[in-house]
Length: 71
Image (tube, rainbow, N blue to C red; front, side):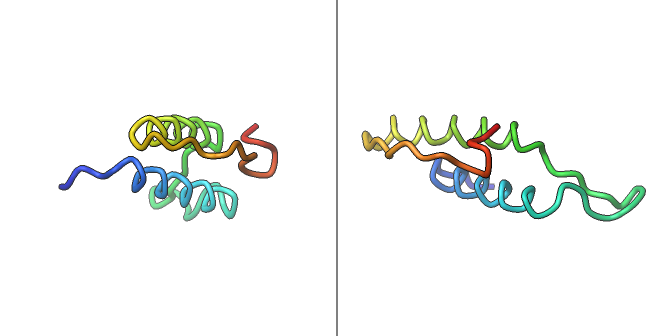
């Protein structure tokens, strides 16, 4: 498996945030899939943004993510 760039990881986390906003849990019983909490995803997103800024030397403008600013 290839190592993913910070940008790729960030895009995956942001896609997961969108999925969580759409639905927290799918399926039933042993076949159910539970997604990570929004807090965990927002924390990971923040970590990846800071890493990407350090790697690229480009600071992104501060934006509020999600419906409640990541809360």
